Image 1 (cartoon, rainbow, N blue to C red):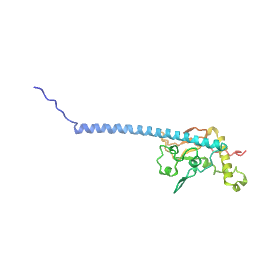
Image 2 (cartoon, rainbow, N blue to C red; image 1 turned 180 degrees about the vertical axis):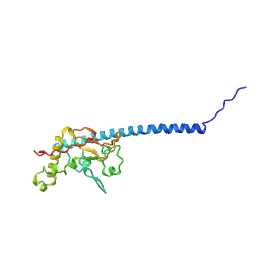
Image 3 (spheres, helix red, strand yellow; image 1 turned 90 degrees about the horizontal axis):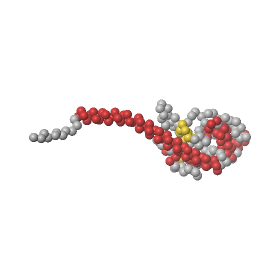
Image 4 (cartoon, one colour; image 1 turned 45 degrees about the horizontal axis):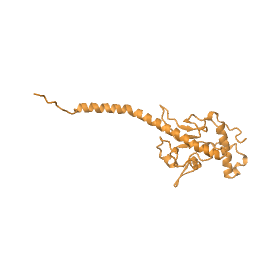
Length: 209
């Protein structure tokens, strides 16, 4: 007589063991997946910054090599964001171009302003290092003429900075985790994009000479 082979399913204990193993594997893989995703976001961000440099370079080619003199970040209005670098470069890079948004940026404020990046020359133009180099009658100049003078000063300061250590564009927040650090990505005037180092102070020396 042939003995029939018995068929049985998993017991409860076996099922629990399998589930436990899967949970452990997921726990091990989750940090790895998170790192891979973070690296992909950072790579995409650096690619965006290099693309935006193309717009800045095109602007400078059409404007006597001067950096745009504009707000550090667009102003939020009921009709949408106004001003800032996206507005200044609108003839070269559309304001709705995905390059204006870091892939790792999920901040609602960035959706309102339309960009993930801070335009640092727009901040430096307000500093004493820049304003004290303008001629005494600058306050009485037409706005366009004054803005051009300010752009000349800021551009000269950037071009004189050692090894291009002052970012032109910078992540508005720390969103690219590397180990225990969460640095910001930055674009420099020479077109390089990399993790930002602490910026060196501007040197206010004869920018208008």
